[in-house]
Length: 379
Ligand SMILES: Nc1nc2c(ncn2[C@@H]2O[C@H](COP(=O)(O)OP(=O)(O)OP(=O)(O)O)[C@@H](O)[C@H]2O)c(=O)[nH]1
Ligand SMILES: [Mg+2]
Image (cartoon, rainbow, N blue to C red; front, side):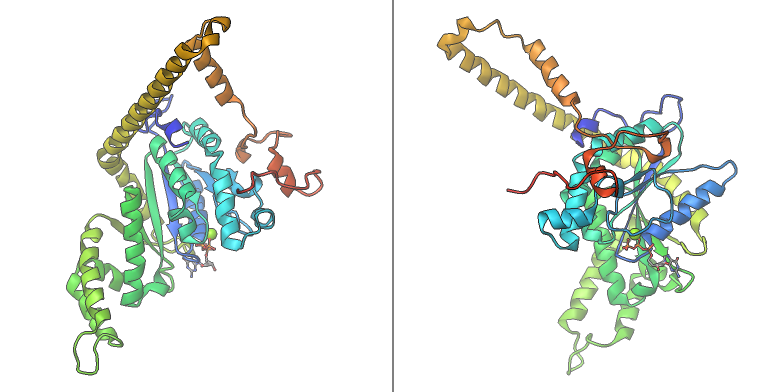
């Protein structure tokens, strides 16, 4: 899937010579305010003069209600509670499987995004509540890669500021952010949210000044010194970790916002706009190199299969009875098969009158006749 999009150049302007929109992927711990933040940036973009309505996608199958109107909503195609029942899973397994199933058709979603690229400046993805479902799953990686292969992309890592005021908690949150940065290698913005209830200034200071963080750690006291007054294992670990993080802080931008009041949102967009250059300079060459390598591997695999096939053919005593083999015809047939579609995603904002629905959508909508989901079963 990601590979299917590798031919699209994210650097190329859209057909009207407009720059490609920037995709903002919001990631953050459960309850950090991702959805409220997406709602806030969505309404901010609508309120600009002239308005710049973004293209929005909800990838959280378990959210009860979305406070903005997403253009693509995973809940329209997959009901995660039904997935839980069918696959006998718990809530997290259900969400993960729902996301995996959605990802199998993400090329269609990408197609919808490409179609709207001329009209919008920003595309915003809201991700599932449990952070690891998106960041440590194959589907999260596939979606991120697919999107980043087609558009300039930035990660907005939402930090729950009031829950991160303790130095140790702050550090674990930053370690998580650090792992995501190194995993995705995409431009990264730390978004300190909920600043209406907690001031992120001390945290910003800790990021700038390593010694300030050490002092805060020492001031926290508990667990840092043993009975003899020597530093504990925990204290040494935290000190070494904070040294690692010091390098990480140099690579990223941090902004303070309140999704609740709207404070800091213009500064967030300044940071987002600045990442376009970073994306083109650092990420794109790597992306192009990976795409070329993928293509090379694919060609080598195809050549190997072809020569094996030719060998088999030359050894087959019945080959005279068969018609002459035409590789071009075979390619055409393959392409035709690829085009076969067993379902279609719908851009809700384009919906005019009754739309063809995929089977799984009917399962969710009461009164539409669908009773079960025919997803492939494991094993
Ligand atoms: N005070 C304050 N509360 C906020 C802010 N942003 C979000 N919240 C609250 O934080 C809670 C969680 O917000 P959500 O937007 O649902 O967070 P989320 O990260 O999408 O949550 P999940 O998707 O369930 O993980 C809600 O009660 C919000 O009202 C903010 O800027 N200030
Ligand atoms: Mg949410």
